Image (cartoon, rainbow, N blue to C red; front, side, top):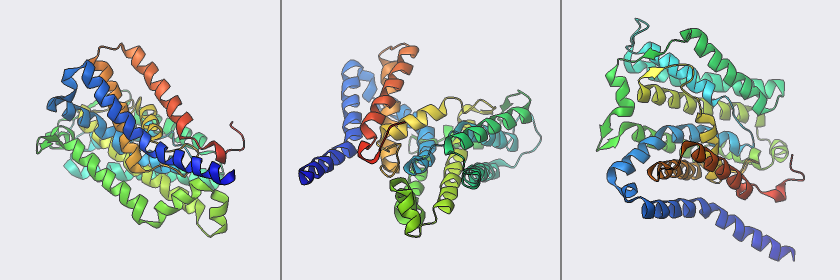
Length: 325
C-alpha cells in the first residue's frame, strides 16, 4: 500500500509541476475566444511589458519562499530605491545628476536592506514575516521623510529608456526582466547557495546536521532578494517617470500571488524561478483578459484573491505538515 501511495503522490507531484503551464494555456485560449484583440502583437507586447517589473520582483521573492520564509519588505525596498534613483538622475527636486550610475547604487541599496532583513531575522531569531514587515514599513517611512510628501519628476530620458525604450520592437524593460531571469536561474541551478536554499526549505534541521550554513544562507537569500527588489524599484521609477513613497503599493500581493500560482510551495523546498515566471504570466494574462472583457475592477481583485487561495491549496504539500496553523 505504501508503494502505491508513493507512486500516486509522485504522479501528482509531476502533474502539479505542469499545472501552471496548462492553466496559462487554457487562459490564453479562453480569453482569445471572448476577445479577438487578445492575441494581437500590440497586446502581447503590452502583456510582456506589464509582466516585466512583477517578474523581476518575483525572482527575489522566489528564493525567500523556497526557504519556507516570507518577505513583506518588498514595497518598502521598492519605495526607497525608486526615490533614491529618482533623486540621482535629472529631476525637478535635486541638482544632483549622475545619470545611469544611479542604477547600480539603487540596486545596491536594495541589497543592503535585504541584508539587514536577513541579519535581523537570523540574529534576533524573529519570524521572517515580522522582521520584514517592520523593515518594509521603515522603508516607506524613510522614503516619505526624505521627500516630505513630494513626488520627484524625472527628466532624464536616457534613464526612462530603461522602461520606455525598445530593442527589436520589444520594450527595454522586458529585456531587463529576461536578464534578471537568467541571473536568478544561474543562482538557483549553478551555485551552492541555490542548493542550500532548496535544502533549507525542504528540512532545515537536517540541513544544519549535514553542515549547511543555514543562517548565512538565509542572510544571503534575503540580500539577493533585496537586489532584485532594488532593480524593480529602478524599473518602476523609469516606467512612471517619478519617485514617491507609495510607488511600490500593491506590488507585494501581486508578487506573492505570482510566485505561489507558479507552483512554489509556501512550505518551502518546491518550485523554481522559471515556475514563478509562469505564475507572473498567469496573473498578468488574467488581469489583461478581464480588462479586455470589461470586468469591473472590484471583481478583478476578487478573482486575484480566489486565484491565490486555489494556488496555495494545490501547491502545499500536506504530507510534510503535522498541523496547519
